[in-house]
Image (cartoon, rainbow, N blue to C red):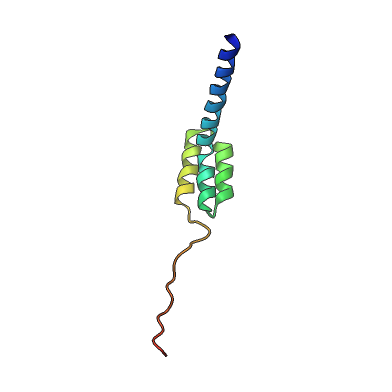
Amino acid sequence: MGAFIASTSLVILVMLGIVIGVIHFLPIIVAGSRHVRNFWWIVLINIFFGWTLIGWIVALVWALRDQPKYIAGYVPPRSYNGY
């Protein structure tokens, strides 16, 4: 019975660590998925100042507000009227 409780506690601890890790690195995940221009600055701020709440918020806001490197858009073909 004691081994079952110890293994269950370990599983819960690992799952909690994964959730906390994902939340902590959320600015990096957002910046990477959006392909923002200042990705490496956001990574550095999140790694060095992310443990403070202010650094994490700055990195997250910057990741959400920065312009993506690539802007994809649809350009319709020109209508050709026989000229």
